[in-house]
Amino acid sequence: MDLGIRGKRALVCASSKGLGRGCAEALAEAGVDLVMNARGAEALEAAAEEIRARHRVKVVAVAGDITSDAGRAAVLAHGPFDILVTNAGGPPPGMWSDWTREDFIKALDANMLTPIALMQAVLPGMMARGWGRVVNITSVSVKAPVSVLGLSNSARAGLTGFVAGTSRQVAGKGVTINNLLPGIHATDRAVALDMAVVKARGISMEEAIAERAATIPAGRYGTPAEFGAACAFLCSQHAGFIVGQNILLDGGATNTTL
Ligand code: NAP
Image 1 (spheres, rainbow, N blue to C red):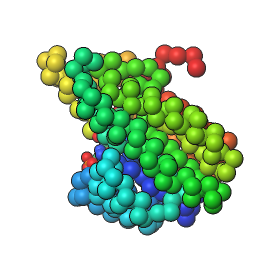
Image 2: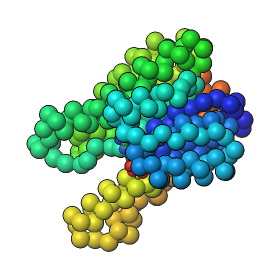
Image 3: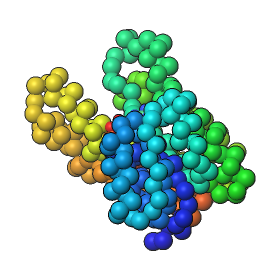
Image 4: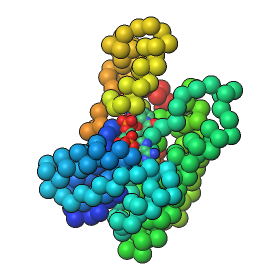
């Protein structure tokens, strides 16, 4: 399917690896020019070079912390953007009774206030031009809480509320905002979560992965490529009537009817 977005420009945040990288790859495959971002310059430049070579699109790599004012200003200086994919590292696991106000502020900054600031920066231009696509990478924890990820549960719920209202305010100008909710995908983040289980339970990594995969009806972890393809579709010309949705990509792991 031709996604109809060849020649558009996208900002894909936190995209040197994992799900952000999957989104960058899929958009590049559709002919979209990219601004990619991550903190580590070396991995970011390597990812940008691979994508340039594979898909023959323009890729600008901007190293920096997207959760900081300076990091956001650095990427936004490369606008305007037709497409925005927001993403950042997830907060660490822990215990509800241990988190301090500072822990919450950090999580809110990374997973709620940063995507909101980026949307506030790019939405006016998209609306003025009459076309835009925003996809926020959130988490399965929006639909079903992951108890040890209380910081994530809280911050992402706030972002979800913002998107629910704002998406309806901008849709009339040809701009859609939707959230993609990853369940377990095979990325460094999943390795870190599985490693915590290995340490806590004294089992092998293979056992930890097999146990987790057995809780997913699809019987396996998702891949960044699958995730990226869903993102690219939401950014396509065909997705203009999908507004303010929270789409689970979890292999059926969340046992809900709706
Ligand atoms: P990942 O494999 O660890 O990759 C994270 C990417 O983001 C890397 O490119 C990293 O590069 C970059 N990054 C992290 N923090 C950043 C920051 N502050 N500023 C700029 N770039 C940053 O993670 P992932 O699995 O793709 O996860 C992406 C998001 O989805 C996270 O919020 C995660 O919590 C959420 N999620 C993932 C899963 C899963 O199973 N993978 C499930 C549910 C939710 P640098 O380190 O060099 O900055």
